[in-house]
Image (cartoon, rainbow, N blue to C red; front, side, top):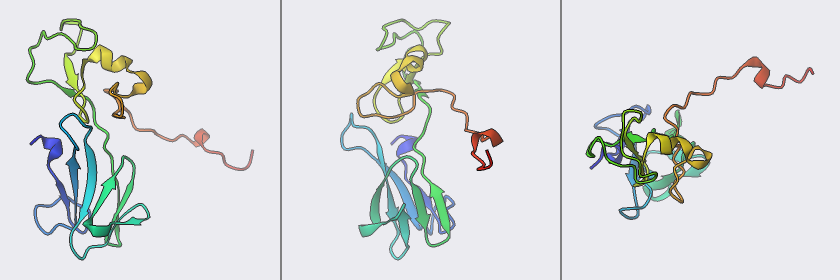
Length: 161
């Protein structure tokens, strides 16, 4: 089991816990080459909502950016965003499967998509269209550095102009 496949159990306050969980975030894939998806599992008797949908039958699928409400007090925003992961089991001079260039001192190595089986060098990841993984159906961001948006006063319309 990979680290990203382990369920994350949350208590009634939305904090990660080992026991006394109220909801759990689990990763799953429909097949070995299918993209990973996520779901929330609600403990019996706990009110959990995903957006405006109540979690019926104890399980509901999750998408990146959805709001998860646990009990009546906790709100969390689910994020499936992750950076491409360095390949640890490959040879340092292995060729990139996309551009077929051998590893060299100018490259940082090969990286795996955390959501699907795509593998490429850092130069190829940087050139993927729309800043997303090149695998059809996988919308994983391909950027290594994604700074958070910081609002400036000029970003908002104040109604006085």
